[in-house]
Image 1 (tube, rainbow, N blue to C red):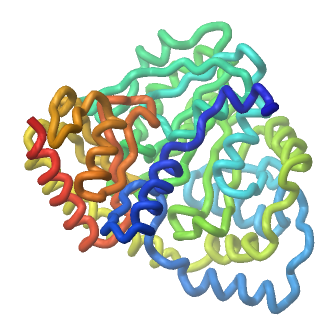
Image 2 (image 1 turned 90 degrees about the horizontal axis):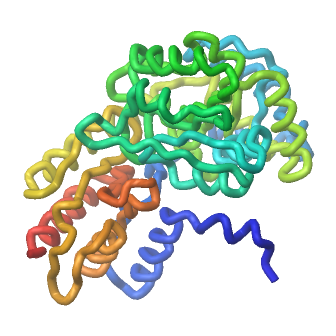
Length: 395
C-alpha cells in the first residue's frame, strides 16, 4: 500500500529517542533528555516583537516562494558581512527550516545512481535524503583521534566519475568539530581538480563556534560557483519552532530549489520571515551570550566524562554536542542488559538512569553516542553523573 520510496528511508533516530523519553516522562520517570539539538533559551525579545508587529500589521498572507524581498536582501547582507560571500538576491531561497533547504538542494541535484560523498559522522537526515533521491551514499570514516575530520587524501580517493555531490557540516552535528580555513583550503584544492562535483555546506551552527573565525568553503578555489551554502535561524537565534532556513547557491540551483519548493511548501511562514529579518539585522548579543553559555556547558560535561574509564572523547570546537567513543563498553553487562552496540548503550542509559541520548549508529558511527548539552547546567551535572554511575556498573 505504501509507496516503495518510503522503504528507502527511516524515521529520524533523534526524534525516535525523544519520543521514548517523553513516554517515560509521562509515566512519572525523572527523565533528563540529551537527545534533541534544540537550544533551551527563549527567542530574543526583539525578534518576538518583530513577529508581533507583523501580526498586528496583518502581514499574514502568502509570500513569494523564494522569500520576501526584504528578507532576501537581509540574507545577502548577512552572507557578505559574516562569510565574505557575495550572493545576488536571485541566488537566495528561503525555506521552512534548513532541513527543507537541504532536501531541496539534494532533490535538485541528485539523479538515480549519482554518488554522494558524506563524511562520518553526519547529521541523521543526510543519507536518507540521498536515498529518497535514489542516489548512492559514499561514506568516509573518521575517528575521535583526528577530531572526526577527513583528509584531502581520503576525499581524493573517494571521488569517481559518478560523484555528483559532497555534503558536510561545520561546525558539525554530531561531533562538534570545526574545519579551519587551512583545512577547508586543502579540501578545496581537491575539488578544484574535480569540477563535476557540487557541494552542500551546512553552516547552521556557524555562530556556535568556540574558536572564532567561521570559515565557509565557498570562499576557496573555484567552489563559489558549485557550492550550496545552507544556514538558518534555529540554532544561533533559538528559533527552532519558527522554521526558517535559507541557501545561497548558483542561480541554476537556486531556481531549481524554488521550482521544487513551489510544488511542496510554497512560501515560508510570513510572520516568521519578518522575525528572521529582525534576527539577521538586529542585536547579536543574545546569540553571543548563548554561545558563551554553551561553551561553559561543554566544559562542564567534558570534565565529568573524561574521568570515566573507557570513555574516549575529544574537545569539540562548536555546536552543542559531545560524541564520545564508547566501544570499550561493548560486551559488558549489568542487571541482565548486555551492551553490543551504541543503540544498546543508549537504551541502557535510558532504562537504568533515565537519560535520553542518541546512538552513534544514527550518525554513521556505531562506536559512539551523542550527548546534546543544550539544557541547563543543573540538568547536565545530574545527567553526566548518572551516566558515569551507570557506566561504572558495567562489567
